[in-house]
Image (tube, rainbow, N blue to C red; front, side, top):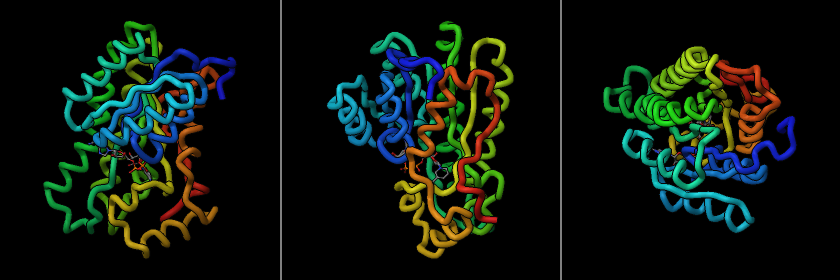
Length: 256
Ligand SMILES: NC(=O)c1ccc[n+]([C@@H]2O[C@H](COP(=O)([O-])OP(=O)(O)OC[C@H]3O[C@@H](n4cnc5c(N)ncnc54)[C@H](O)[C@@H]3O)[C@@H](O)[C@H]2O)c1
């Protein structure tokens, strides 16, 4: 929660991956706090649906089609957000996916490149698109979604994905430190397993799902809003000395 009531009212957040899961929940949480929410997703219908749900509840939102692997589409999304709401104070980069599960020796260049384009290069595009505007504005907060897998390496199923999320953690650290004295904070969140469409998209087997769950000390997946509330705190004035780090939200740890 923010330190100042109404802190988010009239401020704008751009959220990628806002059609589903963590991105959608975070959009709803920021709308609850009175923020303007720009929802971007490759699933254009889904991002419009999230925006319309916010508008129907009396909030302000814009749903846009945006493939985060395409720099020009990310640039256009940020420009559109500024045109609509005047400024962008926060960016939440949630779009991402594990791609196909694969043992290390079966990862091919296509899977490796797709996974890095979607999970790491996209974040680099997004940050470059919004930073000049935030610097002109005197500041802003960028939150990226990494994964607990960056710490574990995801042996046997997703080393390509874990490595891409490791790049997100390192990029976040570097951007935070490069711009720390110019009003910019940049943080990442490294969730354990979260109950969203993500596992289905990665064709996670029922056995692997059980393994994920059983290895979490709390014995359950996170709910997407349990990540979204942290994004709200990170962007708020209750969190002004925090930057560069990744925060683990994982029910006590998981998959050794
Ligand atoms: N769910 C988990 O267990 C888990 C764990 C750790 C990290 N994460 C990370 O959390 C983030 C959000 O995932 P989620 O769990 O909400 O999954 P999700 O599948 O519910 O949502 C991901 C969203 O990203 C969108 N997307 C995919 N490719 C895109 C592209 N090229 N351009 C724009 N949007 C695109 C999808 O359409 C979808 O709406 C991802 O970065 C994921 O890697 C998820």
